[in-house]
Amino acid sequence: MFHLRLFGGASLEREDGSPLTGRAAQRQRLALLARLACAPASGVSREKVLALLWPESDTERARNRLNVSIYELRKALGDAAIVSRGDDVRLNADVVRADVAEFDAALGRGDHEAAAALYRGPFLDGLFVADAPEFERWSDAERDRLAGAYARALEALAEAAERRRDFQGAAELWRKRAAHDPYDSRVAMCLMRALDAGGNRAGALQHASLHER
Image (cartoon, rainbow, N blue to C red; front, side, top):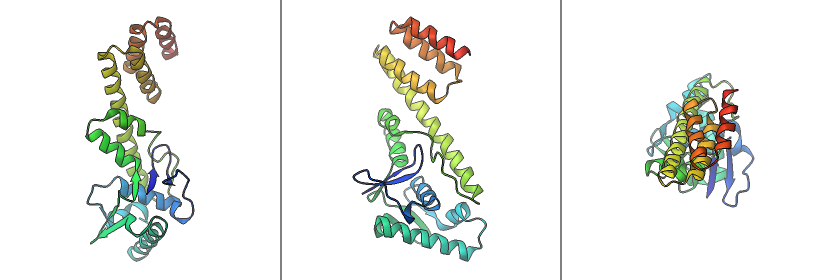
């Protein structure tokens, strides 16, 4: 089993947590894995992958580069890691566990706590693929989608804590939410309200002062 970490960067890890380096961990191959990890269960067509990662190459050269990338990934992760069916390719979740896929699955079953724990930073933070503008547009859209989902998960958890009258827990969650979007005045007010309700009026006033700067 391997782990694909796409929140806060892009990396591959073995089961014991040690990093996987070498050809499989090259930027373009990590980008390919990221696209497969975000695809539906049926996978994604090769044509879409080619347009995303090798738009400047002619079809034959782009297909060759994709085939080489799949070969190198299978060599490092095992033949079963990437499944081909017709023109579609997909990531085998039984071999490679992707944090993004687990995040979406947690949200799908309403487990906001598990989803929030998986989010370690912006999607593919710092990963740049040269000469692939479509990939940049796609990754930007996914980054926004996932960041928004994380924010909503934090809010759901904070509101649940408030209903339990766990105002200290709610304040910590609103603090994380505020750090995620420090200029959102609504979130700032929610944090101040939770701090005040928990008896930390000084903390509420301090945050109000910081937010006004």
